[in-house]
Length: 618
Image: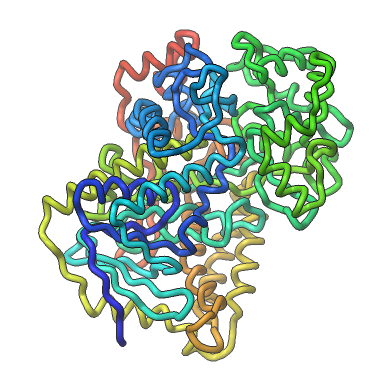
């Protein structure tokens, strides 16, 4: 076959926030960088991150600092996080936000001109630097504008099908042009994976079509390990009605600005679910919760701002017990806060207020769903949103166990543990994306060039084209549809062992069907072919999620086991699940102890826990 060939020192696969930040840092170090993206530059999933960037700037509440942010992140992750990654993230996030501002990001401002910060679930203090409800879009715009001056070569609409190896070290990648179907070989001394998440393994997701576990599977097939694949975050508030907006995220910023959750009986049900770790609250505390929204540092936070896994399970419970909305969710509304604030501040114009505070939310639901969120409640429910599990990397360098292969952003793992706090994803990709780019450049300078074996290139190309050569049997769209239905039903937000064992059996049958998928026509403009290739990735990550979820026989963070509804810290509180591909192609899994945490970090956590350490750290 004829292959187009491009050669760079570093290839970055994925052009979201993590990929762009990594590419900028590597290029700034003086190495040649190629940036490969599955879609168009600027259409990264990062733009859908609306609420803000979590960083302890302490602009709104001067009690905030990196140690509090670290403690919040560890508590949200139920202490199975990689503590070193969480430490680096909390320490460096303020500098990364200020850097973004210096590069031209236009943040909302406090009256005295500082970057404004808002409340978000799981964060003790107002910590999210934001641009209305379109923070991710501003982040991508800023990184792109800055990146174009760094000499980075961008290759758009290319899907990478396999990483290339030379004596166990990564040496490049084979991709194809989605428009024409022509193959491209990318030769490189180092590769950075920043491919995003796995949301399209599920039926209802806030993720767009690109999120098919590409980075996870590329690394896995190349010999890297996965960590904590059982932890899939279901964002509590995705739109479930009308159908035109199903799965679209309703940013946590809506609740951070005073939105409340009610069941079909009109009851604000979250008041019955305040964990012991939070201040006691009752329904009478509604006013105090709204004062917290307005910035009262000493007020109790509203229960809608508990961690995402907690809120999501409460919504599922209301729906299952018959108190849900007509389409299986609950109602999220802004009207209660608007009425309360209108009495407190005569002349308050609710519609203008929400259009200013939540412009994207207002306009997209008005245009796409015919819903005016300033006057009508939204019907919401959990939607597959974010993957905490992914490629296992070194916390300081972001390199996997495959030499020269780095990962950052959502396809890497460790920092978030069992559950990610809102806003941490954007600061995570800035902090750890920078580290990946920095150390990839150092790796390139310290190691000689490698070969890209022709036999691997030919094998990968033949594998990718195989669906064209098969007789008509299975339709890739139908196989994907059946996979998404099965994962939603059997390995979703509430899990049971017997259902997940059924899912494993179902995955084996789906793999066999995927191997018989036939694609008609030719390689140009052929979405059926793209789907057939995506299936390989989705089936791999689905198996990883299911096997890890079965092994962790407890409920922790985003993993809720109906058959093991409580935490089992003695057996699972100090371990991660590790998965890798064996020589025979089978998926292997084990539990591995978490490295002991330094005393100074334990002290930071104890300080935020009333002087007591959680059981996992004792």
